[in-house]
Length: 321
Ligand SMILES: Nc1ncnc2c1ncn2[C@@H]1O[C@H](COP(=O)(O)OP(=O)(O)OP(=O)(O)O)[C@@H](O)[C@H]1O
Image (cartoon, rainbow, N blue to C red; front, top):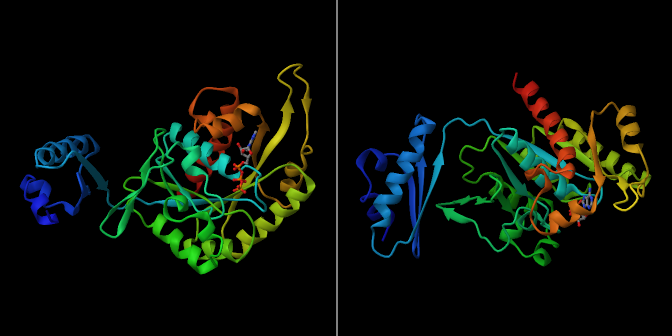
């Protein structure tokens, strides 16, 4: 059954809005131009499509993607000078927290060396569908759609990629059917090499968030990442210090395994806003492993992410004023 056959089952007014209709086995994917449709009518139109196509023989799953017109989508890159400092954990929780603050946000996992968003957002094993040339982001249960390099390539292949190749693959993820998503957070690969630079130059994010642990060495790397953003003319929204201050779950004593306050000091010196401090906490690691971002629930561990998200939301509001 081709696209025309599928469209012929739809009411005329809806058929006129269809941008593409694809059938993959028992699944139909309809991409609709939703320009001018009030939000309250969209659910009704979606249901009409599902009802009309569910009666087609052999179809058991109907998906509808609405493309709204003129969504001014902004991009924020999350970067770090080195790996393992919690860039992916921050990206996930920032997205979930921003969603709770009312921002329609999606996550793009550009970390070709170790894509971890499928695990962090509990979408492992899911594959994005394609509508025509474009990918349809995978829906996570936290209201945050996601596309990951991990859905497209095996890490062993990606390791051999050079900057422009990675840049082109990232383009595919960003230029997907994001519908009403108004903000994309990009989880960049760690480091400051040509892969990262090429990605930034191609995508020209509106802003960047830097992540580091408080260690001196990590901070030097973070400063280098700051220079990379400046070189690509990407404004730095601010710095987040991760894995700061560990509270012993037994005696309550606070220790500082990765140093203390250095990042805040550096942010002050180089005139970059300090966005906040995320504690080193076992529940954050456990929540990451099980795909349950702490920011999705009212937990003490989630609170620090919500505070950072509020600052990013303020930045967005200022930028669009
Ligand atoms: N604040 C925290 N408290 C406890 N564990 C954390 C915290 N932040 C991150 N982790 C854990 O540290 C590990 C590395 O975190 P994450 O994958 O987010 O870092 P990354 O900078 O994205 O790493 P990569 O270099 O692989 O991209 C993960 O196991 C994560 O659960």
